[in-house]
Image (cartoon, rainbow, N blue to C red; front, top):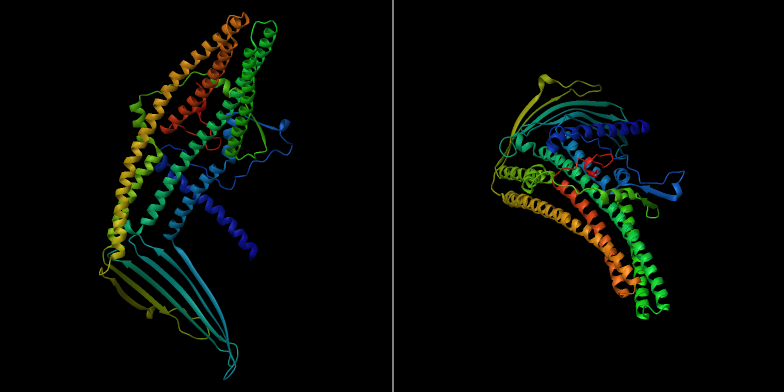
Amino acid sequence: MLLLGACTTERRLVKLDGRVGRLLGEATAPALGEGATPEALSIDGYRPWRPPEEGLPEGVLSLDLQGALELAAKHSRSYQNARENLYQSALSLVGQQHLWEWNPIHNLSLLFRTRQSPESESTFSTEESLGFSKRLAAGGRLTGSLALSTLRYCSGDRSVNIGSLASLTLTQPLLAGAGKRVAREPLTQAERNLVYALRNYVRARKALLLDIAEKYYNVLNAEADLQIGQMTYESLKYSQDRSLAMSEGGRVTQIDVDQARQRLLTAESNLVSYRESIQNAKDALKVALAIPLETEIALSQKDLTVLLSASLPEPDCTLEEAVAQALRDRLDLANARDALEDARRAVEIARDDMRAKLDLTLSATARGTQGNRIHAPRLGKAEFSAALDADLPLDRTTQAIALRRAMIDLGRQERELEQAREEITQSLRRTWNTLLSYRQRIAIQKLSVSLAEKRVENTRMLFEDGRIAIREYLDAQDDLSNARNSLTRQLVSNRICWLQLLHQREELPVDPGTLWCEQMEMP
């Protein structure tokens, strides 16, 4: 019996997973629009990342951006939490739907009783019932049962007394609580909650893409800073050696030599900071990917090379068109709009609860003849009854409080919807303007890098000819390093800003299994 129960449990879980999948399919169109692909949700496939048994090549996990996103799709803890949140909403809907199905009822009780005085007597009795329960669309409930009771004397005459009972009961609200809209409200809300959860899940997936991409580019940016810092250090090392040689010939003063030495020490200190920034950025990426911190990772420089050489993307519409698109397509705004409808229904339900309650109960009972064997219930001699249960609205303080709270929640939800529209508009306008400013700043910064490179070359020749002090040459080198670092950072920030704009316009169709989308391709 235990093995059978275990097998039944597994089959039921598989059946439950199938039912959740069907519910997600049914919720796809209301949540995401016609033509959207249903989510294939699996919560049991999650496994923490582990290095392969044969080990990593050279002990290092090599990643490009697409590979990092694929790892996040498989191992991200936040992505798994989002899956489970969606699954939980589907389970809540399954539970509500189950309450409206034909639900069987089975009870069995066994009792052994012994009495020692005045005469020893032992009895064994059983009570068993089999029936059903069904909620009705109008708010009523129908229940039926077939019961069998036995009483066996285990001592004395050892007689047996068996009785049977069949009953059918219908309870129907006539005033408060009557009607399909009121009765099915918990089911309706559970259906809508699944739609909300599905939208939130899709948004969470896109937000994860942005988070991984930002952390990935932060690592590349930190590595680029180190590379530029290393170039600056080598250049300053050459300047120091050159100044020492020139000082021996009396062409520069000791002050110039000390300045070169000081700049070299500063550059060396910067290298330490850059290495620390790389490690911190890598650790942040590992946590997001759910990779153990002790795992060494190496990111592909190809992504940064493509980013530095790619043309800057341009929006394909005006700001007004982008705002209108966001207000039309944003999934989180759709949730806010639908939540307002929920609040309005809650007020109607609370108003209905203020009315008097009047419930009609109809029942029929048939008993079988008691004896030493089973007799079927005598339906021809069934007993019928009708009852009214009234609750007059003499005290409705609790219900009035609930109604007032529902009205307050409705007003609050109206304000939240209005605020959500304004925040979406504000956020999109800010991102739009930031993107435009990046275009201008990047153009300026590219020119700054070009001028800084020429300045370094010119001041180097002038310094070697003894026509300028070493400070001007060192300042030119610092300006070139800063210009290159700033250009890289702004290109990375522009890329993240562009992805955020697509996210705010609801234009990131992310693949659930890989977190990749065509918009990630460089133009």
